Length: 102
Image 1 (cartoon, rainbow, N blue to C red):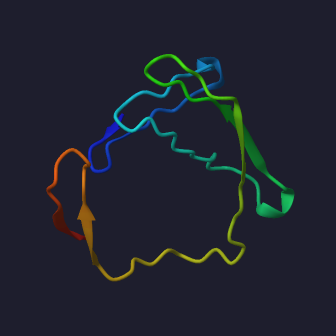
Image 2: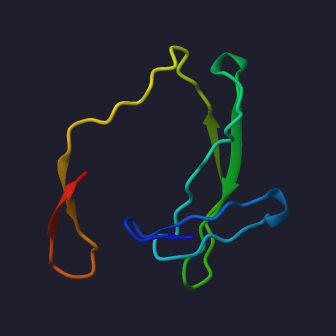
């Protein structure tokens, strides 16, 4: 799926899809933990490895990322803050746009 606001390609990658290739304009990985992950005191973590291949086919060494899942024990309800302003720069030209962040 393409998120137009930030131009991030997001797609769930299942174990059967591995190894997977992340493509798109930003080539980013967005980590999303399971909704039913256990509490932080159980030492829950996830690990994934990746490498980077440039347009000429040169690959980096493998890197590993360990993500520790924590849960706020006080279970506060999120509250939206004050609205603000944000600068948007796409890196393709010299134009900056100022937009209201709601």
